[in-house]
Image (cartoon, rainbow, N blue to C red; front, top):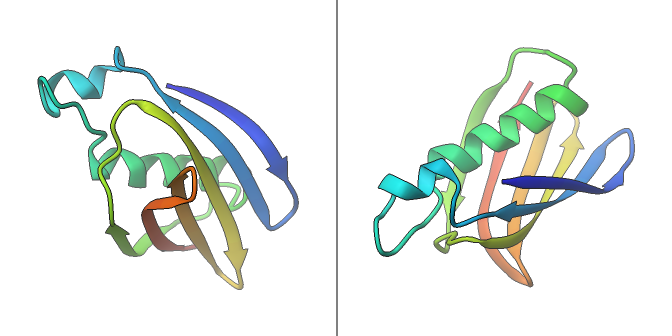
Length: 104
């Protein structure tokens, strides 16, 4: 996996996320038709928010939904602070792959 910061402000961060076919989580999820596990996508959001926006505050996942599978490829991850919560959106092109809200 490769992360590249595209944009950052006090309340928002946008990253380019490249999921490589060789990434370990693809080996078992699923052989022959690899897709990123939803738990991996949520954990990625938690990690980036904790490292950049929430600065180590305790967090909890309020809600998360998945509208498409995430096979190897390049995605855009947008994390925006809204009061004490963070809106998370993972897109591939214009297509929303996952959306959720994390509270801190």
